Length: 174
Image 1 (tube, rainbow, N blue to C red):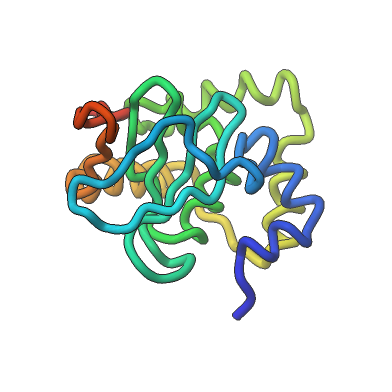
Image 2 (cartoon, rainbow, N blue to C red):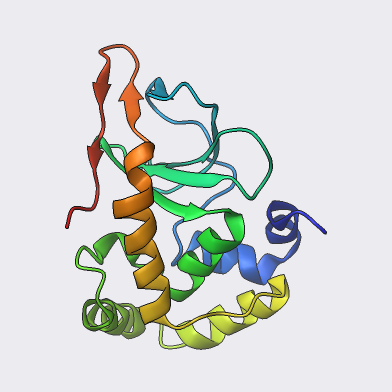
């Protein structure tokens, strides 16, 4: 099975969509601050966003590891279990950070805003998914999974600002 990271790098259509509107760049894996997991598990930055946020693989293994997102303002959330789940999130709901209530209604409102600037959003998303060989679930399913991962499973992934020993704040609360 080919690495999904390698596939994204090879598939220009997918890389462009993930870069925008997904705000996901594989060339930005360095976090601006020194951080570690409270558990002592390994933490590997592998991608970032335009605002200084970082996506980290947690623990040992490959692309199936849990993925933690830390923004540049001290917020953090577990966002996916494995890279396939993260890429589906970024393709289906690239405005995921604005979905604080995890509802389909909220997501549809954010989608409408994106469609004003990018009327071909759905077509671009579908081409990116096809290029990566991914089938996409609906928004409601993706948001339900994000809620589960961020609010239930994410409790075990506490990110610490190493120099001061302070934990980052959760991005999502329920």
